[in-house]
Each structure stands twice: as structure tokens, then as C-alpha cells.
Length: 249
View 1 (cartoon, rainbow, N blue to C red):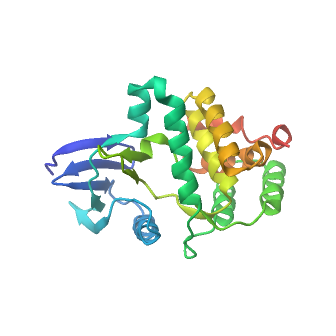
View 2 (cartoon, rainbow, N blue to C red; view 1 turned 180 degrees about the vertical axis):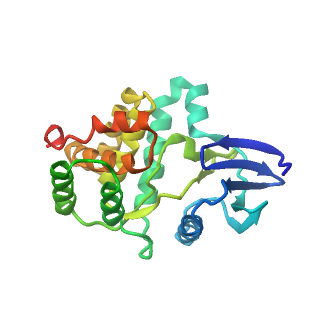
């Protein structure tokens, strides 16, 4: 395999740029159903009219599954914030506006967020009492059907030179409650040692979406617990501090 450029490398996959395409190449024996589900989710998001890279192909390369998309030339919002810290608030407002547009769409065939969170929490080593409290809170949350990205962070936003915006990485997309998606984004900021930026994000999101901040914070223990199902031991230790139901009443 001689691809043009390595974009990012993770434990389970490597993303390459090659001849105008983005090739997401997974490790051997990666779950076929997860790969096909990711491609299907992306196709469903394409159908909503959101600006996303076109899905081109699902194939195998050297006995490893690969998903191939069109390559979008530009800079991530994360890069732009790093290069122009004086524009952080402007970029944060843009970030929330993009999320607001995503949440305005519907895709009825996507998996339900509540079901995904419950199944993920089942896989963790959380004690039965704590799990019961998490499930009780989850069951009591309002049922919504907005598109929730599931991994919405500035590195998944590409801004082209002409200013057009593209949204990447739909592997975790579901339909559900906007507050849960905002709680996940806030948690991602905190996991990356950017809690101050996360607080700014929460303020802007809450104002723009007219959602009380308390509604978002009530999701924190649930989304933190769900992320513990598939993470490193270091991340699990960090997340375990966020799963206290009492703290987020």
C-alpha cells in the first residue's frame, strides 16, 4: 500500500489521502457489521442534504476493510482556532451554528440514541446500583428525533477556502435528544483538557438553542458512562469521575 499521505492514525484504523479520495483503512478482523453500519449511516446523512464528503466505496485492501470518501481540501475548525486564537468566539459561534443545522435535520432510519447509550452502559464495569440510577435517568429523558452527530468536535469540521463547511466522521450518528449531543461535545472538550473552551461552548449552545444548561448537564453522567464501554484505561479513569448522578441533579 503506497498512499499519497497519512492523515491520521488510530488504534483501529488509519486514514489516508490518495488521488482525491479519503481512505479509511481498518485493522484486520475489524467488525464487518460496524463498517457496513458506518457506511450506511453516512449514506443516510448524505440524503439529508447536509454538506458531507460523498461516500464512494466500501471495499477491501490487502484483506482489510476500507471505506472510501471524496477528499475535502481545507482546514479543520480546530486548526483555524489554533492559528487565529483572537477569533475563537467567532469560530465557536460557527461551530454551534453547524451543530444547530445538523440538529434541524431528520433521518428516521438511524439508530435511536437512547438504545445505543443503554447498550453501551450495559458493557461497562459499572456497579448495579449506579447502573440502575443511570438507566432510570435515561428512561426519564424526553424522546426526541434530532440527528445527533455523536462525535461533534472542531476536528470534524472542514472549512474550504471558499468558506464552505463540510462535516466529517458519522460513525457514531444516531437520532435523539439535542442536549445529549451537546453533553457529548462538552465532555470531549474536557477529555482533551479544554474545559474552559467547553464551558464557552455550553454557554453559546444553550443560548442559541434556547435550551437551559441544566438540561444538558443532566446528560453528562449518561454519556460519560456510555463512553467507558470503548476507551483506554486512562480515559475510563477520567470518565468515571463524571458518572455521579447526584452531582448532576
